Image (tube, rainbow, N blue to C red; front, top):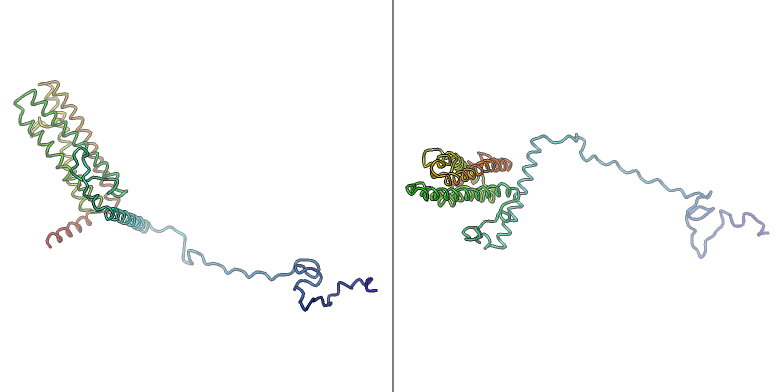
Length: 294
């Protein structure tokens, strides 16, 4: 009557091993994944994760750092950027040692090497480029000033002195301005030299005074050799054409003066923004003096 025994196949104590194998550790009433009553097998709960420490620590308040700390961090980041830029420039010069000595300016007659994009650090390119435009503007003003002196000499042969002074301003002013202030700024931006910036400020201030003086054209100290407004008014009574040439020159000098004033402020703002001050200028000057003495 085994076929009629309802417990024949469900005996929990029956030995179901085959060939000595042990049955799976599932419930006795179902599959290996079921419990004795048909539900899922019981599993031990996962161990609770240990609480992680706060990133700020017990003493972290989450408040931003002081203004002084923020300023120090900003300066440190600025120094790191400069060092990276200097390393890049040094690597380029090392890989191409002849590039620095290649004369490429002016294009029609190269006499100096000039490459703002390739040599000047990125954060200093704008003030240097603006100063470069000021230098080009000065060349235009000096050239037109010479044209005015030549026109005056043609209209009045006795004005040799005024023509000579206008020629001296042009011949001496173009290389003089390059050496006294533009090259100083160019090299100071490359070397990040506070002393170089100081020399630039001195030379460029003299250039600014000269531009304003030429724009006004006061009636003394070689008035006719400057195409300023007062000189232009005085020339109109003698020769209208010469007076117009002087008025055009006065307009050029005025634009040059305004642009130079703006460039002066722009470079000074960049100078202060890079963390330079008078103390650093004194230290560099003392170091240069000691090197020269040795």
